[in-house]
Image (cartoon, rainbow, N blue to C red; front, side, top):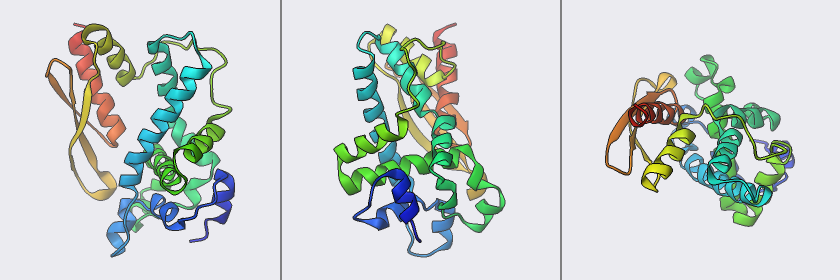
Length: 226
């Protein structure tokens, strides 16, 4: 796989190119190619890297913004649709390795798949270059995406709203855990359990982990705001 143009676009030259190749490998491809690993572990890592980098930058950019506004800003920047848009700008869709079924189902253009791949690539950058390099890469990619002011419309993101309510009521955050998956590879449904600080749990489902989390958060939010 020739990723030279992609590395130039990301502005990071990989010492371990295999990391980037793994980040671009969807599970549907790995399942068809014996010995090839998929990008799900790197996606998990990249999600955490993004959250920390964006949180720190938001904290510095908007010194007077309260936690709730910083949470909404971060949520807007790293939501699935935003990350999918960044993936398109970097032309990640040209490099993703997909299984035949996923390819035929139009996976290369699915927001969830593109967002997951973007996160995986950021995870690969972190492992290859360390946190400071990863932060430089993330902030460069997001440089034009920040709002001019901290004020944003009220978020429609259930996870962000639930976090604000939980922080206010319990001084703690809800916890999300992947409970399982069902269905064939190209139509996989994810099950997520969201647990409030009180121990009350809610189960959500969706075509991606993020959508399942949003569904669980919606149920928890409706329960808390009755």
